[in-house]
Every structure is written in C-alpha cells, then in structure tokens.
Image (cartoon, rainbow, N blue to C red; front, side, top):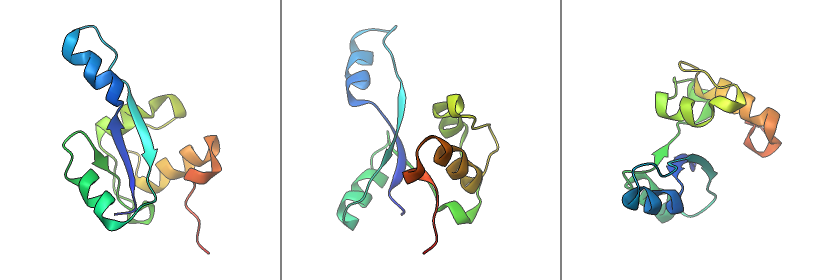
Length: 97
C-alpha cells in the first residue's frame, strides 16, 4: 500500500451515531508509517486505501465524491486524481526520483 486513503472524520462518525443530520464529511489522509499502520488502515472498514497512482485504476465513487470539490470526477484514474490533488497541495503529486 502507498499509505494514501480516504477515511471518515472520527468526530463526524461519533456525531453521526447520535444525530441523523450530522455531518459525515470524508477526508483524505496521507500516511507515512510502518507496515503495521498501513495494515491496520487496510483492515478498517471505514478506510479506503488508494492504489499507487501509476496503476491508473479508476477511483471509487466514494473517493471521487470526497474530493469532488477539487475537480475529481467519477471515473478519474489514480494518476489523474493525484495530479488534480497536486494542484491543491504539491505533497499529493506523484513524483519519480
């Protein structure tokens, strides 16, 4: 895993349990950690790891919806998403050294 994933905001998840109108905002997190942390996130049903950008696989509708405000469209592939997110924050752009 490359450590990038979409996961619901923990505070929103807790609020959603107590109120049907609560915000369920999805957030993008970039994780740089050991393999155990990545495995834990992959096993979390509320987390969705993203494939490596160069695999050029389409992202899920859930991912596209979470970052739609940044120009991501349903059907965009992982590289296209990385490029669009990289326009907002360069740390999210795929780089080859």
